[in-house]
Figure 1: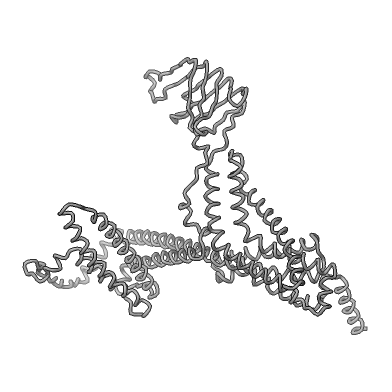
Figure 2: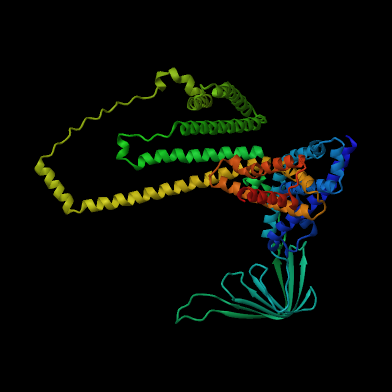
Length: 597
């Protein structure tokens, strides 16, 4: 590495780290404010807050990196231009592209690291973030009983303390017991008390002194029945144990969040896309079958069959599902065989040996059929034939006696006589009979009834179709969201390169360093980038454009700006100097004067 590369790269790394920390802190503050009411005031330990902040810092890094690259590259080349270092570099015969090379290589590897982080690190961090946020939301606020205010934080109890001597000693205590769920039927009054948590703050002991316990029975009685019982108990000391498990931070298993697309890498997203596509195809296939049965009159002569691509996908999904079931059965048999192999008595050993022979025969049969699955790519694969073949082999292995005795005539299946259905002659009605039947229909108001039944059936069919369409639309929307999450792992990394192509030439043009003009321009471009990103993703969610184009829309729109600024920087254009535009306006005015004078 030459001294020039060290100079330029060294002047870039400092602002980059500084701006990345600042941008990350700003985005972290925005995220923390979003969950402020849910995470603060819960009495959490400092380590829990630091863990949550660490997760937030990593999860927002894909958004902070492009802005940090834009701002730092603009500041770096703005400082070089402001101190005439860039001019000295060009005067020595070194082109602008050569000066951009060290930072460009660094940004290229930074983009690769951003992609790896988006694909491997960020999904795991999002999983832990969702779990921790959910646990914090489910945790009750910290136990904070104030003087003169009813405290309802403890389930089924409402406590009021008129005076607190300290965190343990209480005076003039009122407790409403709602544990029976019938209102204020239990009241405890005490002159003083002591509040002491124990067992790692999982329980709290409230010892009351010199008070009364009032309890009223709640029952339904008529006017002439006796009043309900009312009891008053005087006590000198009464101890109540409260369960404080709701005040503890209980960690939820991470398996509950396994279906969220934010915690999946590219392989997981592809599996999710395949599952959604299979589900959409399944619903569409069933719609074709159910629609034919919904129109019995039109379906007598015309059959409504699903398209070929839907039927092929349905057969493929069914074959894969059947193969998975057979594989699970094979594993269950292997587990059962291992359990039986430890049998020590004679009959058990014989049964185990017979079962192992049967299992080996069945495993060989299933293994021989695995080669049939490889013919799927050759075009001669028939899923239904493969499934039938596997079922036949499974039946033969599980019941070998039946297959061996197939030639025994005594065990042959009985034959039943085939009943031939006689053809019913068609009756021909006379005109007088037809007129009489028509009069009966008119007199019985059958036409109106038939129209009402048909209208109800049509409404039912319409509602069913609307429900199916809504279900398919929701699944397709979720499918497009999975595609957005997939392509975002590439586009957010590529955004670092686009921002560098904008920031570095722009800094060489404006020749202003520091935190003034570079920060203003960086914020403007980042807002534009963010708005274009949101717009493209919205188009994809609504199905208005291709998923890849919508996700990469912001990069595609800003890339021409980067190429334009790079071209202007190579020509030492003065785009941000007022004299450039004033001279152009003067030339235009002089041209008009000379033309029309």
